[in-house]
Image 1: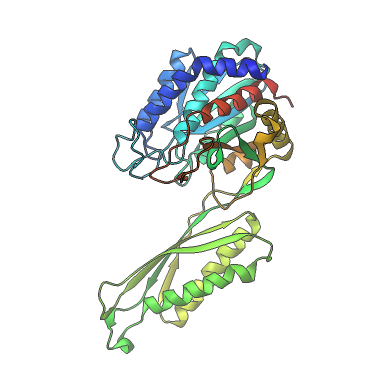
Image 2 (image 1 turned 45 degrees about the vertical axis):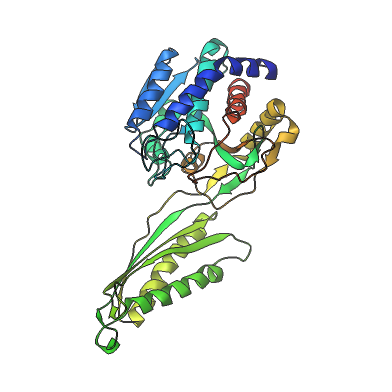
Length: 391
């Protein structure tokens, strides 16, 4: 299908795409609670004559085409626990919940793609599996659940594609790069237990605050002393909670943080050292330390050859000047799980209005307001991939 024909078809369905996007934005739901979102997607697909099925309780999967091989397009569908402050006429009606990461854009885009491709189903060289995935924002991640349910094997999916809104890039542009592009992400939790006493009599207790300070100081140098200086690692302490008065040493201090890296072996080496260092320091201060990490998403790896294929698609439908290299970031995404089992490509979609000169709020902001025009270019990418993919 030619570029002109693709955008002609997009124009025909775009009003529908806008309506469903705004409905999703109006009714956001948190991770693994996307019941209304799930039903909205099912209703849209059913209206197209496409059979959708519920997967992982609140997700949807659908398939079109009669090819012996299949590729998958994935959109995440969950929202965030953020109170919306955009002032849009279709602002969230669910107080404290908002589509502040663009998952409504992702989902509406994919529904529009399904509407176009259904019309040309008999001409598709491959079957297309649409995955509307729950729970991207919350561990263990909806992608992990879907993989555990065996969807990719059942549908014989041999490659998977997805995108993410990028508020730093203008509408009409995308960016992508091969290999590791997003980091692994682990949640770190410590409980330091001491013995409470009056601040004027420290000798009668053990101080978990002093222990916590020593642990945190040691951890910030731990990552640097463990890794190659050229290896990017983030070990961040983001919360220390303990104590209720100026004259009392508390019994307990709780610490939270995150570990992020692109190197999987280094990831586990640092986690092991964090446990050892934390417990050793705690013992030295006569306190107890319970370190409880929660393993998060692995690093996201774009398949090298498939990324080049998508780059060529982008150049064809958007223009060479609108396809840039993505500078890898320490963000995390559960699409990484797919990328670990089959060839996968994840690209970034510009959603900043063209020529916008003011402050444009970023991902996870209560004022995040991506341009709906971006969905035309997102749809064009997926439609072209559907017709052009071969292996």
